[in-house]
Amino acid sequence: MGTRAGLISVADPVQGWQEALRAGLVGLSSEPLNCEVPPALLGGDVTPTSRFFRRNHFPIPELDVADWRLEIGGLVRRRLSLSVGELTKFGTVSEVAVLECAGNGRQLFSPPAAGEPWGLGAVGNAKWTGVRLADVLDHADIQGGAVEVVFRGADRGSMPGSAETIAFERSMSVAVATHSGALLAFAMNDEPLPARHGHPVRLVVPGQYAVASVKWLTDIIVTDRPFDGFFQAEHYVFEWQRGATVVREPVAEAQVRALITEPGEGDELRSSSFTVRGVAWSGAAPVARVMVSIAGGQWQPARNLGTPDRHSWLQWEIPMRAAAPGPLTIRARAIDGVGRTQPAEPEWNRLGYGGNFVHEVAIRLR
Ligand SMILES: Nc1nc2c(c(=O)[nH]1)N[C@H]1C(S)=C(S)[C@@H](COP(=O)(O)O)O[C@H]1N2
Ligand SMILES: [Mo]
Image 1: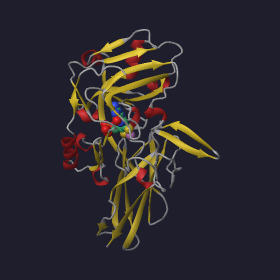
Image 2: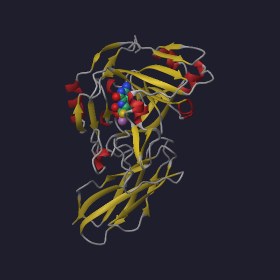
Image 3: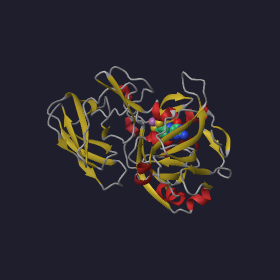
Image 4: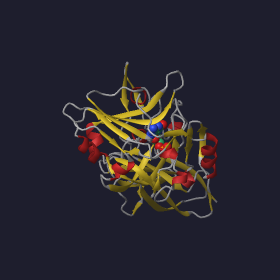
């Protein structure tokens, strides 16, 4: 199954769990470590690393940079084995990009969908620094007949219902690998990646659901056929019931979504004039605008704040005035540059992926 260059140990689950709770995150499970951000801590420009959601399937491996190497093989003319120092020679770049778990919002599906019951906080927007995957693949020189690129992480374990020990592996087409702007990232928010986010090097694939962004990356394998590993063919797959048949499709591009970060669910406001704020992103194209509606009224366009990086989330706000005191619902939905928007209810699928419901927050005015 390949080597795990530089593996020293696995992280202490109790410590990782307590650290997340101290940072104000909501814990789903401690081993593997799964934590999300409560809506009140979700807004802002860049998500501080301490508050970035954690999504793991196995214990967190602790790797020694001195022994770590990235092996690049398969259908390439030049096999590569690179240390972190050798990797940085490809030229470093930085980009702010959103990572959202494909299961974000799963809790909202009805009937309930199988999997971690994420609310809306399995998402973050960080500054990633690394080298371009495309430059490294270019140097390795992909051969004709290549179809996909498989990425393997150093973490191992077994999934419920199986005794087999597997690695975390995910693939993407050669086109996505070379044209998505993917980074082999070694820094997050200007600090070395922490162990839990993939130290020393993770993949960051902007615009794709975060399952593509393999942490603790050790191997890149170029193949001549579609990959059918567990996290490609059985997990992180949409299962759509179409008539009598079930259509299966790996999750890929992140869907368009706006989240209201202010006011918060259950808030009591003293004034009938208030400002609604939030963030929005889309894998397909930059967000064009966010529409907000209160008390079931007309959708009104929010103001976009600044000109964010292509793959960063957009911050938005809109002043609102309510007609009367009492309970009030606020809804927001984003529309991206290719015209995609959010459904009131996305199509139900067994594993609850892609749940980009229109966000609704209930408040009360005094
Ligand atoms: N090696 C490895 N990479 C991984 C995972 C994992 O369990 N192992 N989880 C994936 C999933 S499903 C998500 S949502 C993101 C979470 O990244 P984060 O923990 O840095 O927020 O990492 C992805 N990369
Ligand atoms: Mo995920």
